[in-house]
Image (spheres, helix red, strand yellow):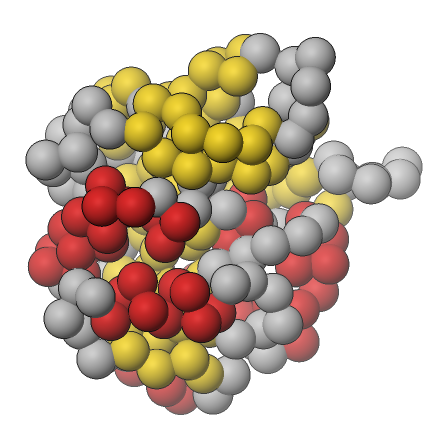
Length: 200
């Protein structure tokens, strides 16, 4: 069973439909026991880093993600759901950066590009052995964001270029994440989701 974490942020229904298309049983939940025990957990995210992090913490999602990692259970972050897995982010930050879950010890910072947000289709360049991108290595995916990670983390990465080189996806043992929205990326996105589900 795939659990999509409902913490007040994310395209829950479109994500649910996309993951159901993979043939998996899917539940949208705020229940920590369900989120902990699911075969795979999806952490979606739309909006600002700090607001998403507050929502995540309100349902104990930060602890859930850390516990799943320790247990070797799969978690997939999407868009801001990827960003909040990092140590911190500078979106609307004051003197101190907004704290994230801390799975990866890098920061999320504003993209250096003449027009923001980075919105639309873009290709990715894969570094390392990828499970997510099998069969869709040359495809384009749908992005909507103004902030991104810019340093390599994890065992395998995918990169995009928009003004500068940005991290488009990470695969790191039980934790994986995409900056783009696979649920909005047509057939290529559905294939990527299916690859993740079949790897569980």
